[in-house]
Length: 178
Image (cartoon, rainbow, N blue to C red; front, side):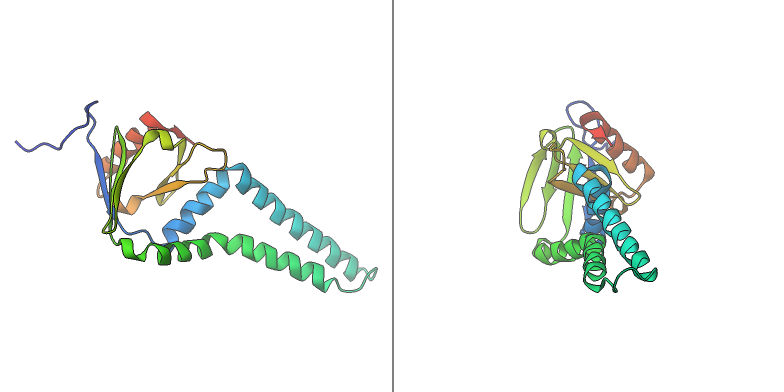
């Protein structure tokens, strides 16, 4: 009888085969932005810039000042850069990791074993502090408050609902869910 290998605590490892896309990176960065202090700062800054621009436009519309082209243009440009930063970074990451090819990640009680065409290595659970589940991926974040380092486990690489549940259980047993 064939059975899947188990880890020392008896749970079955979860194996994911995937190639990360720009959308995967962008989604992970947006997910991180939602839960970290740095991400909240970015969102609040964008709202303040937009509110300031609207106030300047209102003052212009009331005739109390000349058109604030420089201020409104700068705020609009900064907000656009902040909004599209995850997509731009995602594209850059895909270009930077193009030579790695297909990635295979085995998640077990020891951590994550990652194997690509270019390299392989194990990242132990202690390197992660928490994880976030989005619609498309599990995003593992480093323990520092801004989650500076992250690992992306796309859900599309999981073939069954049982795999998704096993992965979620492994993550829950080793990391805090946010």
